[in-house]
Image 1 (cartoon, rainbow, N blue to C red):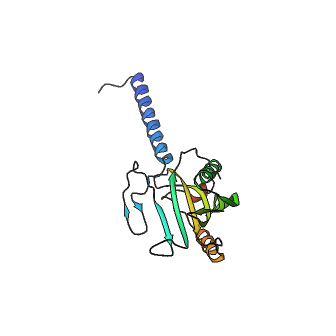
Image 2: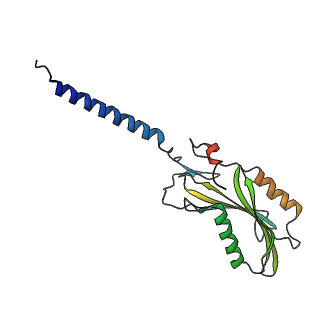
Image 3: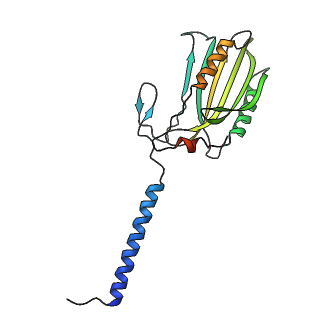
Length: 199
């Protein structure tokens, strides 16, 4: 058996070192990778696998009547936004859209910073007339994300059709539902980090 030269041994040592470094790099990349999204998309009653390129434009609508206009409704909507979206800018854009789309809008409470489920949020209250009838609305918006960790603007709206404006009971129900709101996080996502999202 022929003895290896010093150059062969140096070369083998260098190759082993490169392999070790590459293995460590791959392990570190695996540790730093974000957790995979949950396999299934969940609604209240069912779940399914949602391809990332299918946009979720879900609205949850809660009313007091089966048919016809409800005296009070509670709606939760979600809109995908850019990764660098800023809550204050989105709130001002929403305000601009409301001014354009609602005739004779009357502001009861301007855009006000609040907290929803531990996250910075914005609240606005206003009323307007729709087909001659008064409509009173409370809106909350805040940032969250979907199961693919794509940023979302969450919008919670309480609407009253009472001619005298939102009743004390309707306002209580809206606030009580918001106070019990808990956010869902994908497995491995740290709510403490999520709470640090910019307001």
